[in-house]
Image 1 (cartoon, rainbow, N blue to C red):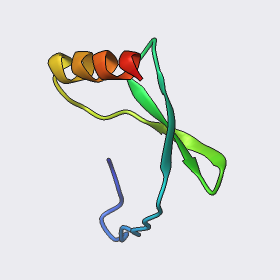
Image 2: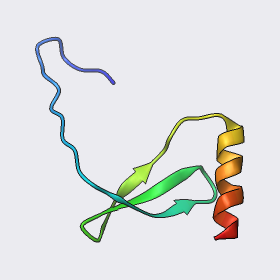
Image 3: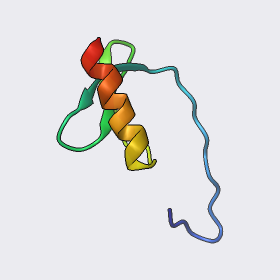
Length: 59
């Protein structure tokens, strides 16, 4: 992330729910207050992503 030298970061936190996941590219679909809020694209090894898909298929 790039920012100007004289700017400050603003931090905001919110509770979100995972509403689903993408199958074509790894990512979780996030909802906030019952509305779509975006996609979370966590970084991680391919083995972790493969393990997640294995668990998700069982549900």
